[in-house]
Image (cartoon, rainbow, N blue to C red):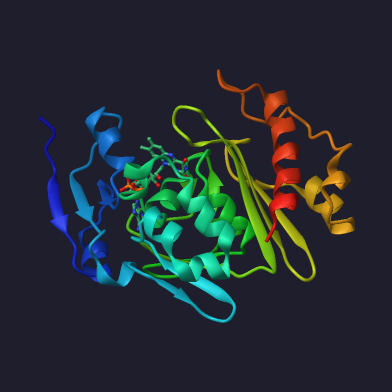
Length: 262
Ligand SMILES: Cc1cc2nc3c(=O)[nH]c(=O)nc-3n(C[C@H](O)[C@H](O)[C@H](O)COP(=O)(O)OP(=O)(O)OC[C@H]3O[C@@H](n4cnc5c(N)ncnc54)[C@H](O)[C@@H]3O)c2cc1C
């Protein structure tokens, strides 16, 4: 029998007050619940944050799209505002897992968990996102620290993520055939002055491919990447894809992203 105190937080303040060294916030529960069930983790207190009003909703302003941390992937995927402002972000959310995962899983849970194969971290990096938390704002570049590791403190709650609207963008994922997580995922965002290429699934944590960015900043054309061979020594390797295969997939996905950029 697993025992813990369950808290139904009605506000950000209540959630943070209930947090301790041995607590966990519960949002969509798609990762937290299975890991507790399998006894991979245990907590004295579980704090439900998914019904907090301030963590809901999508707001589009002139330059950015701000999405509440408890907003579900399905809501982002079907939002007319997101589809209009950053179509690639809506498409990314619509390609996460399966229908059940998308109807439960949330943006805040995804980035707080920082799975090396998760899709959203690449969007956060490429779209120069600012992560709003219960007590500060963190640039995405400083948020994703390592495998399943972020800049969050134990009692710090992600409240929203603010994405910059680029001129155009695309997200290309080569999905694991079983889980649908990214074997490799490339989020490309084109701005007036530069192109950002963020890669997930390929290394222990999301990263920017400076080689791809350099080639595309010179000439925004898929053929600019034809002769690019990325080093494979830092790439992930597992039963699904070798490091060399992943290195090659990153380039192929980036070429497809250039073609699909809108
Ligand atoms: C079968 C399956 C397939 C999946 N496929 C994909 C995929 O293709 N792409 C992809 O990107 N993801 C995928 N996921 C991940 C999924 O979409 C969820 O985003 C992820 O499981 C975590 O989100 P959640 O809302 O369920 O968080 P939870 O499970 O509730 O929480 C996860 C972690 O984040 C913490 N947390 C939650 N909310 C906050 C907050 N607001 N502030 C601070 N900490 C918080 C929790 O304490 C916990 O440590 C998949 C999951 C499953 C089960």
